[in-house]
Image 1 (cartoon, rainbow, N blue to C red):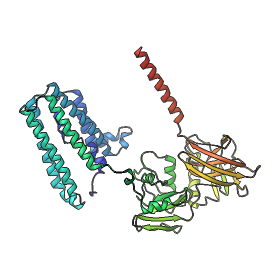
Image 2: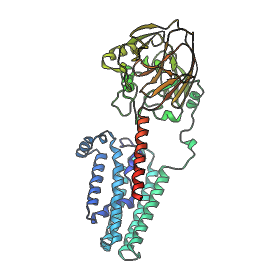
Image 3: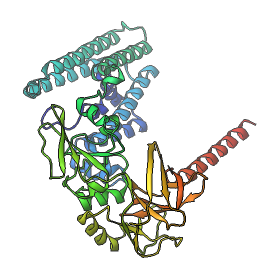
Length: 481
């Protein structure tokens, strides 16, 4: 809520281990061990990376994979290393390797210093708290921290003057204080509410929920931002962290303006013809939003946003009037139509926007589709009873016996995980259409086709995991015997 803040409450809290935890972590300066030094290096490195300091940011960016993580995520390492340091310090107290008077002085000093820092920060930031109408909440948080510091100070004095019976009593008391503070902090930030209150229904969502499906939506800017659409039960063509299909994102960028390198991506062209093909029936905007083009009609207007309906939207699965079959080597997990030499053809195709008239299909490696133009106008294929569920889709097709095969176009990404069968469990050929999307080669006659999705690599992964579990069980059994 505060302008210029580094991140949300959740991520800013990743590195917080409590006032007691930080005092105990600083107490580890009395512990001389390689473990303490390693944890201190980890904590300082992660803290410097989270703060965006040059040398730390450069070093973390050179680490494979970790360089892609948002800087604030490194606060998790700060918390893990800080708790380890605190545990080492308290272990030294119990073992008697640290002088009792020094421990008492340090607890008192640490409590006073942290309390002073908290007060100074609060005074310095108070204008920002007042501007965000959060001064009262910040003051309650400050008093909680000051109260904890006062309790640690009292415990330190008691330990210094031998009022506490033993070092173990000191550790138990500090652990109880730390648990109490973190419990109160957690209750303040994450209160217990009914799950129905987490993402409550709104008039806009209620309106969309009553519309016949299947259909997809898209938001203007950050409206209905992915992955929030999941809680509303809506399918969005946009994607977000953590998993994205590269070919799909590249196609969106090529047709609608969707920067692949951006962490929070938005569509630049909400009137792009590609959205018709992608089954985008509704556009969601904030209150007072305007339609991006003449094909969008206002169907809902309210204080929670506006909804526009696309007059040119295509069904999720449809029969194009003709097909342009291009010669390509079909890959297992990638679309041959996204090859570099075919991208100009795809770009021109999506600009024209004549999806119902024509589709671009990759030639089948099995020879069922040969390069050329195939006219499907007179093949009289009827599609009905389309039903979707998680990782499964069913539909009925009907065409005259003896007719040629017909290719159905589905605006569903094919990454190698989809397979199809008919009512007799006979295999149905699949192909790539319009880039990375799914094409269904339907044989003549009446069929009930079942499409099932299994993530590529699932079976090999299960096999490897099963073999590894068997090896571990065998090793454990042999050691016991």
